[in-house]
Length: 439
Image (tube, rainbow, N blue to C red):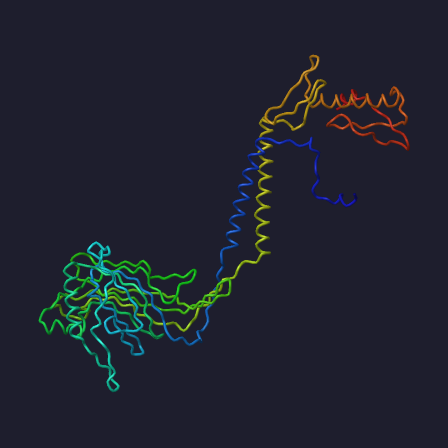
């Protein structure tokens, strides 16, 4: 077929090829390399690719969700207070029936383990904010306040800690989340003032922030405060910790088109040493941990875009084809080195009158005939040449004069080749033994 002439992949005869041990080893290494690259490209194709851009936030949001999970190692749950204060005038607390505060307190022993059988601690709701003619009045339930003071004294004597977790919903304005002890305001100290029983002040605000985020989580989100640990040294005077957080609104779009509204943030930290009892000067006298947050007017839009199938196929063909090419190059280098060291032969087959055998690809073979040393290659060519001469003599009736005049060219590999045309309608043979000698 004429179309076969343009084929770039010529197929040799099977008897002209030979498989070797070192070729098998290189093949296995090439298959392993190609498989590894294929798996890498497939995982890279299946993994989502995120692209982000920054824009001015023109949307109007209503609320902001704060998710916290903090352990206070030296502050009991009864003594730990949580206050939320923002620029809009909101002043919620864990003791005044705040609606947006959903926090859980777990009591810990001195070693930081949850107390067996204690369950979650519920802070007594001893305060209530009442609107009285344009002003806010705090009503105090003295019964609940006295019970709260008794629980504080009991847990302080046991040197308990507290793990605080949950979420708080606040207005989307600048504000702060204040963690302190129920000993910093007149209302908190009112039961102690009425009874004359004053509890010692806690100044050790050692804490571990397990999680702090604003809004739901999304793939690739990074919360800088997660895993933050601050421990006060033994005998120290204590510190007041402030974390200044800049919140960046984020809009995440998955590869399936689902949109998720959330927030990212950056943080700066300051630790202020506390003044000692009776020490004069400007400084903090009460220990606390503040999360001071503000919002950025810039929104970050993150979109997952999958890689195109055509792009993936191009990369796959490149890496697999490169692995195959490198494997063939390594096989050629190994085989050439082995031949130069005499570890393999040239790859031809040898035959004799009584049978035939092939080289095993390890060492070259030698043969002897009537005291003269010839290579098996030469013997094979002579044998094929003699066989061809005998066949042509038999078919032409003696072989002295063939039906047609001409000449036959001998193949340097086998000693025999099809007759060649030397004139119009004339063919001739050549003696196989002479051809073998010439080769």
